[in-house]
Length: 205
Image (cartoon, rainbow, N blue to C red; front, top):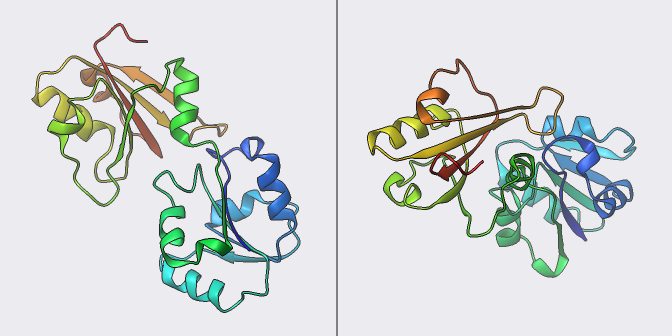
């Protein structure tokens, strides 16, 4: 069985008990460097996940006799590796264990419900901002090209009344959550590892 396990937003306290159990009983754990470093007590083989996902699929298919766990930040099916693996591995042999996503985490920190939330990402693409910003409640996973400041510029360009929440390094010791109008967010010098929430109006938090 191939397990794809969400570790939660970052801090290992957020890993589910089922996820911990499956990792412990694995022969091999595959993941990014930061995720592998967070698995302290695992005594089996660790393989660092490279950018070429096909190599991981090939490894899995060539080692069907092993208990393999692929670990990922957040939830594997929330803009994560789960989608790719589910399309390239026999799902009869695939077990996906959801984790708490960074999206869920940030909403719990700002005390806003996730009902009717529009979820999207700017990873490797340019969002349709007319469509994105037409929603009253948005959460976007960002990258280094389109991040909080680029989003705020798009809001200002359309003269929209929005409140922006920027979550950095969520659940880690250096976590920072910044809340403000787009003009205020633009004044912040730098952002790191961001999730951005966009809310309608100024009285929503």
